[in-house]
Length: 294
Image (cartoon, rainbow, N blue to C red):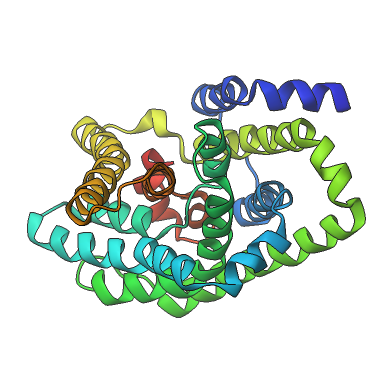
């Protein structure tokens, strides 16, 4: 079983694509959506956070100003700024909701792995990912209630409770598992953890796509617009942050390799958000509208 999980961890993108494909083509499976997908999401969050060195995170928090600025920028400034601007673009309500949700979501749990692969600031990325995830139950309802009321009706209190329970349970279980396994065992089992995460993602992707039967969507225009916006948000965030930061660095003469690595990490986290958090807590009628942003 360990060898299977190790193999899954090394071939995660391939198996995730398989989960998407099977979810689209197989007949609908009858199951209790909330009962199945919520535990899956909690397990996914655990596999992403269990490798986080919380002592290093606390070290960052001892000098928290930079971390606070980055997290507030990602979780408040970006969604409120872009969301306020998007109100004047006359977007269809489904697209406007999807745009707001992707901006309110914390960075994708796999972002630190990509950032490490690119040899950027991994420690900061882990700190930001965990901090933003913990903040999301408070920031997302605030931003959505502040901007989206005139477009879509979302119960901010209910959203807060659901998000808080998912994030809190995930964090508590992560701390318990880290205590039981120990840092050395976790460090040597990275591929196995990645394999568990890949297996959970495949199952999660299959159940989501299978439940909502996306192959039955007939509004091709909306499908195209949503897919285009998903790509635009992802790539646009990367480009805007990199260009703006480099311009500031050059203007003030503070350009350095370390700052470029930090900026690259922030850009990746800004464009890659964990939309799965909202899949299991939103009313079903909203879910199809945001699936393309996963």
